[in-house]
Image (cartoon, rainbow, N blue to C red; front, side):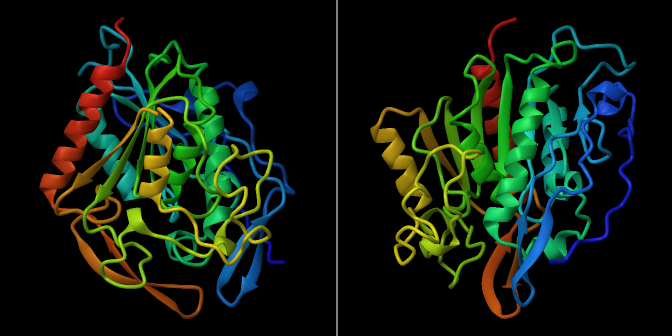
Length: 343
């Protein structure tokens, strides 16, 4: 076992700018720092790892946590409490993609909550490690626990945000997380879930959803693909890559598709999962974007290759043209404005 070097958590988040409030205002009783024995990295093959052991809870006092609440130019509150978008980061950890999306939402008086699930667990290896040297299931489990905790904490922040108008958005591994959370959140508080670049493997996908779901894919999204047109929404992998079910994750298609059960079968395509739930009456749909790959707010389109572990090289196109970012932001704002309850 390899225990990574841990850094001392800052007890409070830093507040930036006059137009935002942030989680630094939490009292010590609100803090939930990770215990010393939390989560360990285990190498399962050269340059590839999983995570074992208890996972850290969401800690609103952690330095990676930022609740940004728009205000007037002089710092006074808006006339009405804003809706909140909780952004679950992708497999590489919290980065520019999530911050770019949050900034786009702030322009429309929408509050955002971001955090780094890996940092919450004391892991600080950065994107080069987490983006290519850890299993999907281990990354998704950490992000799932952190995002669920973030949602539960957001329910207590009714003095800052409209907690009847919460939206969950997640990218890549974060998309798998929010898709599963769509099965367990309260429709009285969460109005929609928006998974972007949804993979079909890791912790699996739920059998039911309790709130509207809008899948987002760039039409050039081949992230992790074996060939250039191995599109994410049509992707299937061996069931071996799925983690066997646990009590922490909602019941879903990993129940009979994992390393123990039917390991030689293939995972369900994300688009087939969507159609299956739609046939059962779920409010679920898919939005495609031209001139966009994986992680639309990552930056300009980058047509690169990525090596997982020591020798598994894949197509991994990311980013988008400005037109796709503008359209996605407009679609998200319209969804939020349409589904949020009247104040």
